[in-house]
Length: 174
Image (cartoon, rainbow, N blue to C red; front, side, top):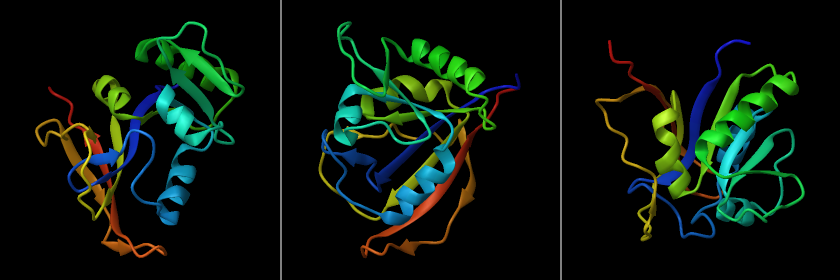
């Protein structure tokens, strides 16, 4: 099997806020379409609160849910107790499901991004032109460790919200 890529996918406000702990502050149809396009056929590693906010598995993808509760279980979810276990489960899921894409996505929330970003090769970011107040933020992207490989023009969503898409690639140290 070829190398598996690990990526984070996130929508955050300009001040890095990703939500209020239960949901996003925005709904952007174009972001949902991009998320589906990028992640289809791949495992998503998320925290239990993110799972609860979605309420169901996303079609065509594995939902790997990190939780400390050994008794937790939900239909359509695969439980993991650590980010490392989640990556192993995601790797096995890709092997066993014959997925053409060899990519695992760190899917949120804040604690999962903080744990998982160290493993990531890419970050797919939707930067939303807002400044909501919340303690739930995406980690700061260090320009010494990450470079922008794609940046869209600023767009206006069908809901009237300004945003842009960015892709970051981890800079490998030589």
